[in-house]
Length: 379
Length: 250
Image (cartoon, rainbow over all chains, first blue to last red; front, side, top):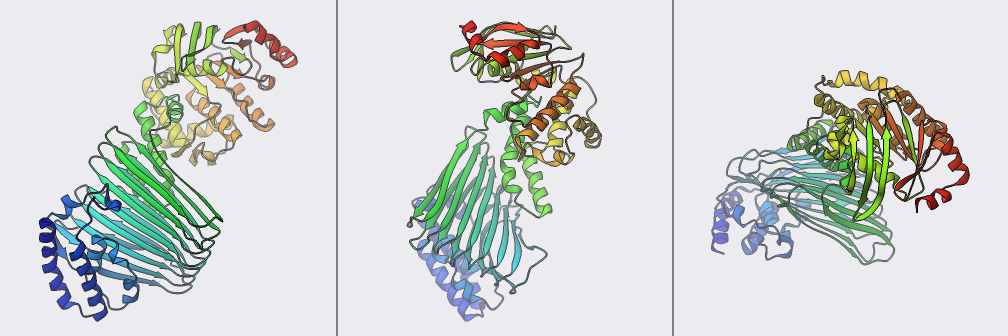
């Protein structure tokens, strides 16, 4: 408690400086509420069920200097809908939020992807907060990249409002250096007949956590909430996902894949809620993990909570090694065992990387994966 | 002699399936191994290719006079043993041409031959693809991913063409093929047949042998070869079924 208190005090100094210069009264009040929440609860601890396997104490107790956010005026309405009381991180994010708002006008299709890239600074904590409003009938691709090459603390949030008949494709790539610490939350709401297709790649960071919550608010929505974590060394990654079918006739797909080497550790917790009213729901969820080392560990918990009979749902999780038959096939073609194993591991993750329709990002991730597996594939 | 199987006893999970199998194969020969389900055909293929789940209980296998059973599956492949799978495996994310070049170069390296760069290999692959009438579009696609049954089997023969094995074991290559695919696969095998290699066709049905004429037919029942003869034996089996050989194997 004393460490946390000290921490809170440290953030407190930075917060008082920020709040004095915050000109937007609505935002000032939001920031104050969020900071009060943080002061009351502190950072999450493994005593909380949702944080059982992820202990952030060692990283949050480090001395971080705060890079306070700036606001660009309007849009406190969407910020008000942000669930800052999800945990201490989300509260702290809103308190210091460095806000960027992207509004995609009605019936507009953006030809180029919108990219947000965050590099870290040594010893500094930063709080990016992106708001995307895809107005009715619009179409856009968003790329959110975390690429710190130093010991930094990123506490990020993105809120995406997909209005009626809009289509949003979202790539989130976290490839921080192994001494960086990353928390991120993604909050998405889908309007009538809209679609949201996300691919979340976590290959970096020493300790990283991503919370994603996708909520259908009107009929006919469809969402893909997919991801990949590929870890080695002492890396730890935790994804907590919620897909919330609150209304009828929506479709959700979820495939998360994990590859764990060395002493790395991963947590996947995926909840799919099908509420009482949500008849005609179709929800598929899968989490597959490949353990490449005896010392690696994954805790996976896919959960379906269904309160309606008229639904089509399936979920499952696997943790295992490479299939012996697949390995044998490659060996009979004369490939040495290590190369055969690495090619199959590459194949395992490709299903996720292949979803990425931006060549530059896809080939960079391919290269990162192949490099990690020590495979040279030339075309 | 290219391959000599001597009194081979082998099985899986403690169960003996091959119970004293003898087989001699010379270069330039095509052998058909036929037999009812459960006779041990598939076990023989897998033992020769080195599948880790199968264990050799006794007996031996010499390949070019050397102990084949001492070698790992990948070493066997680089020495020139190839097995076409009944159910080829999909390798997503790795294109056919990348995969084949890796395999080709591993073998070339092993034999002290020059490795091919992607451009050189592409030319080589294009020539080989003609053997199984395969569209170069398939080079870019992931290995076997989304291929039809016939395309997968053609791809197996393409791999054989690229790797130029001394001994090719085709395990139920005819299964699940329609007549056109069967013709293409069989013609491919016929083109690859030479005085420098040998082929073992493992098959339940005589159908494939209408297209690929074997020099020898061996009938396997209950883990042993119970009858041997020329290609006419296959026709006899087609006519009489396997019941009479099953009795012989007991």
